[in-house]
Structures are given as structure tokens and as C-alpha cells.
Image: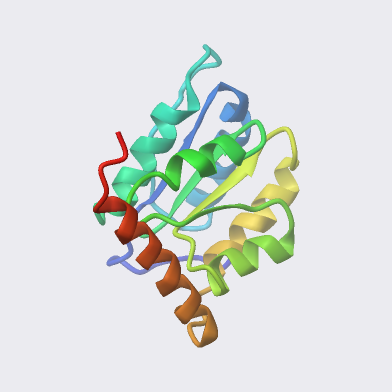
Length: 162
């Protein structure tokens, strides 16, 4: 991954549940070695933790503009993606291969990637993070589709769903 030296870049948010702790630490170290600033939302021990608590905190940090991007890790990446996608304005995508990591950014403008510690190993995870961070939203026909996703979100935010 190319070294990042821009002083205006916001820190990357990272978080995990207990199943993702070891992979989170590997990815965090990789990001720091690559020149990224990282804000770690936990968890910090192998004690059980509910992934929605961490997923929501990271997604909120991204939604509020504290971070441009976030990385969430649980056993499969699925629970974290579902949680993060409940936060208005967030597009989180499970990335399990090179193509999904690239398309999450280029086609879907996902600000959060989720990884499954029980699905991808450390070396593949580093490669996926690198590809995802180096990819930018392509716009074009994809912009129209992302705009439609955001329109659906806005429609449901106006409803009382309780």
C-alpha cells in the first residue's frame, strides 16, 4: 500500500467484536505502517462483546464526518454490515475477495468495509483493505444507482417505523 502523508486526511475508524480482535490488530498495525492514522473503537480484549455496539459507534463516526472511511470486523462481516447500514447515510459492504473490495468503492461508494475474521485470513484481509482504500467512487451510472439507494433511505427516515 502506498504511504499516505496527507495531513488533511481524517483518521480511519476501525472496530471489531471479540471474534475479530486478532484480525483488527493486524489490520490496524498494517494501516499505521502504511502511514494512515487510525482511531480504534474497540473491542480491546477477547471478552464477549455485542458487535452492534461497536458497529454503530464506527458508523456514527463516519456519518458525522469524523472519519471518511471505516473498517469493521466480526466473524463473518455480515452482522457488522447490517448494523452499520442502519445508520443514516452509511453504505457498508462485506468484502471477501478482491473484486468485492474494489466494487464496494467504485460502484457503491461504500464508506465502510466489513471483513469476516472467520472468512478471510490476515494476508488476504490486508490486500482487501489496500484495494478498498486505493479505490474511488467511479460515478457515472453507479452514481444514479447510489442516489436511488439514498432516496429509499430518505423515504423510510420520514416514516415512523416503531
